[in-house]
Amino acid sequence: DKDNSGTLTVKEMQEVVDDILERYPQIELYLKSRQMKSIVDLMKDANEDVKKESIELNIEEFRTALSDVDGQMKNLPATAQVAAQQGAYLADCFNRMEKCDKNPEGPIRIRGEGRHRFKPFRYRHLGQFAPLGGDQAAAQLPGDWISIGHSTQWLWYSIYASKQVSWRTRALVVGDWTRRFLFGRDSSRI
Image 1: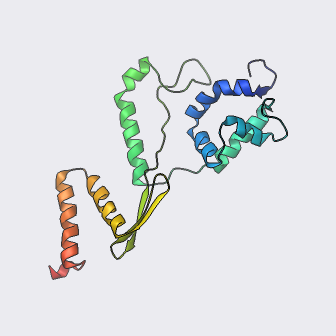
Image 2: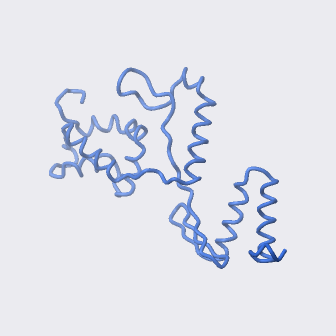
Image 3: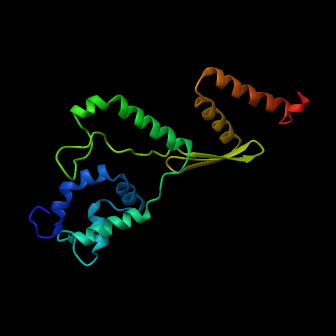
């Protein structure tokens, strides 16, 4: 609120939109899920009786709009996919700690001067698989691509094998699958 009027105009809001979207990635996800094109639509949602050019929100209405966004967001799922991405993010942060002390790359600090050291973590959903039994699986991949059947099971096998840490574990896993395919699940018959 540069003119200390107690309200935020569209122009004032547009000046800080990039920092807001960087600082709070959940707002960008919320706008996409609600099919809103910009933060202006979010402001209109909080104060519906005004035109696009003359939107003004007081601080309480702005807080209400952001609390609506936070109320719709859920925690990240407790899956290996999330943990792997967070681990890679932290490793990258630790490896670049000295460089980012000198040249911070994160969003501007609200209190104090300068920027935060690092950009915030952003989760990218890469899809999910579910076994259906009978050598079939279901997959949901980015772009809302859905597949069910035997080919999806083989896709899951290839992705799972590629995620193994070493060639030795890949060979052991593929060997176990081959043994199961040839002799069945009952290991007492081997």
